[in-house]
Length: 467
Image (cartoon, rainbow, N blue to C red; front, side, top):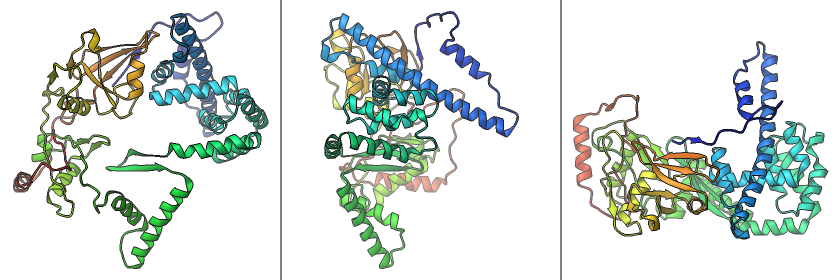
């Protein structure tokens, strides 16, 4: 939950229209009365989005220049000029800090090196995403070669009319290779250093495990999994090829058919969800909200499945009634001790900067230790590494804010304020929300489930956290 506010806008010059006035004018647009008119309106609005994107690019470049000039006048070292600009752009555009950096890079490339692509964006012949594709595929070129490719393709002349993403990518890659084949080849060789594995949520308590790999490694892995699946299907295995490939990937990576062994999986749920069949969802850190029934089933399987050699450890974390605020835990030390770190990480879930969903890497004192800030859960916030460094840039201030849940207020060098409130934990009452409901459940079944949990041995490496 976050908002932002800033200084009043400067009055517009005579004969000009401010952004706020343009937005109010758009708000009164009404749908046309016939289908042809509706289609025309959709196209015109799409063109308007492209014009706005081009204006944002010009404004971002101007902001970067002004901020660098102000920082230089303030005596900041040349190597640090521009620090914090991408974070301010991200907050203004309601994007993550990483996306803010990409948007500034796109803006600089379009405004300073690719005038034809910028003109096409302003004319509605390219949208922001396809302009991004052109910039991305020419990123390895020198400014001169990139400008030459921009002139060769000249999308503002209609080069890409009716072209999809793949055609634009192919044309940009071919033009870049013709200009500088050596650099493009070196870029392909360097790309292998960027290999990584990422995890992101998918619907229905599923997730996407994605690997960015060199082509030979990726093709070899896929071929091996495919051969394995085809062999099992030929032997009569009823699972689909996709299911067999996914199961084999989990088993070969973890060494266990179920895949859950020796790994801590923290599941946050209320005692009512655990023992009374309540419908209040649980939260799985690193994933998000999961259904109550699914969480109970996970706990039950973890404690009963002998094939998965792990047990259940329930850790009690208590919240204040109604607000869902975790009970305080303080320390006299400068560094956050393990228990307090766990408390803050569970409370914040991800980086506390608005729109940033990056994992927590640093536990930060909101009011710095050297300014009298205490090592407490109220003065602590989970941040990603980039946001923690940005917070220390001159002109940025962060302070605790009012609210029923933990709130911090971030003020940027331009005076714009943004609030960040810790996400609600399971069991938190929402104003005006539906009354508390307990899902019907057989009393005898609930008693048997509680008895099974009591008989579980613990703790072992595989852990499930209940709050």
